[in-house]
Image 1 (cartoon, one colour):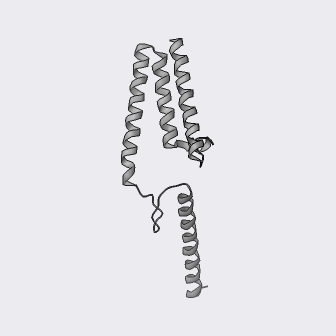
Image 2 (cartoon, one colour):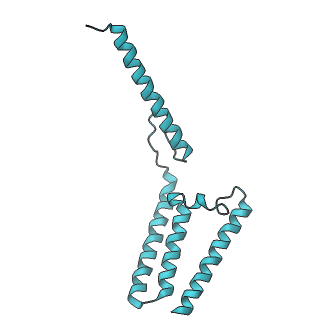
Image 3 (cartoon, one colour):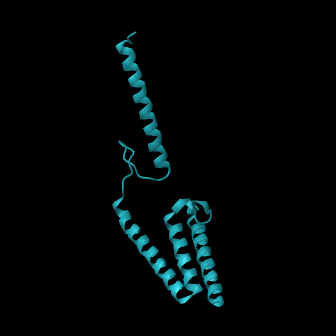
Length: 136
């Protein structure tokens, strides 16, 4: 029993349309998450201006790693706390795993409230470091 050619064409057209709808949904989801995308393919586009930010993150993580090695060699709690604070700060700055978005005061639309949130985080980090320095 042979299918008509128009039925085969209709079926292929439906599958292609469903695929296009799925690609459009993935593209919209990527844009909603903040990824820059091309209109054609939905592939992520690297922003050339982000290279400097990535380089600074790598340098920051390298400094934190060196501090951890130094803390292990000298048995210094304050160096270890400083390294952990640097890593947490870099994770917040880069919004890894959506951490910054989960802190309402830091992720506020109001620049004033966001500044207060960041200042509170820095003051808290300094207090933790001071307590660690007293213990070591």
